[in-house]
Image 1 (spheres, rainbow, N blue to C red):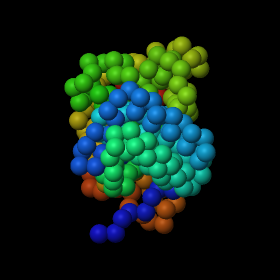
Image 2: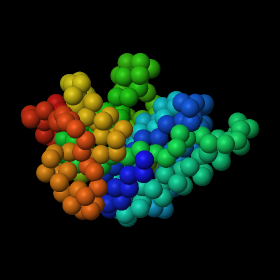
Image 3: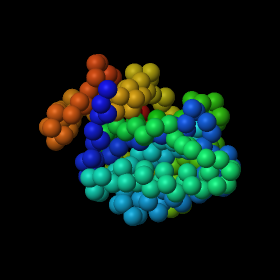
Image 4: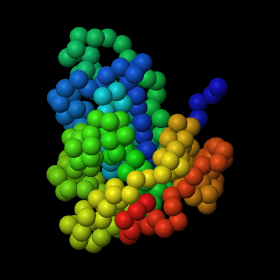
Length: 237
């Protein structure tokens, strides 16, 4: 079955996922995580990509990234593959692939869809049972987005900035998003779009992307949508 073409659209946010080969561990120490984030920062600068949310799990990675150039995300992930895998293999005296095939990506609409995806990423450790609260897990963007912890990697997205004008109030508004747990339909929609490399957004947005990508598939079956009361200025999503 032929591979789907990438969503190489500048200025459109992508949810990127990469899993370790045969589910093997990709991070064995804090130093590994720090080195990965350093590689990520350097590659983002070089290929003009902005990271808005991330989580580094034991055997996989989630990124929420907006490229300023068409092939920015592909080049970013290629650079990470070269530099981090070389470091990891050298450190642990191993050879061969570290990641399971090519990364997966889903295009994400702004506003409530973006915030839903950010929440999905930063609550990954909670769903995995390795943290009680998102802030308990060190290797995610939650502490930057919700608590104001300094990060060399995270760049605020326009949908995040729209939560509040004042920085301190923005943190409060963002934390409130996590007080209401997303329903299964919302979570499954994020997973479904990522697994099948589709578009997470409204039907109108999907039609727009389909037109921009020469009828590349953007939807598959019936998927859920964020709740109607969800807006960037409300606590729930």
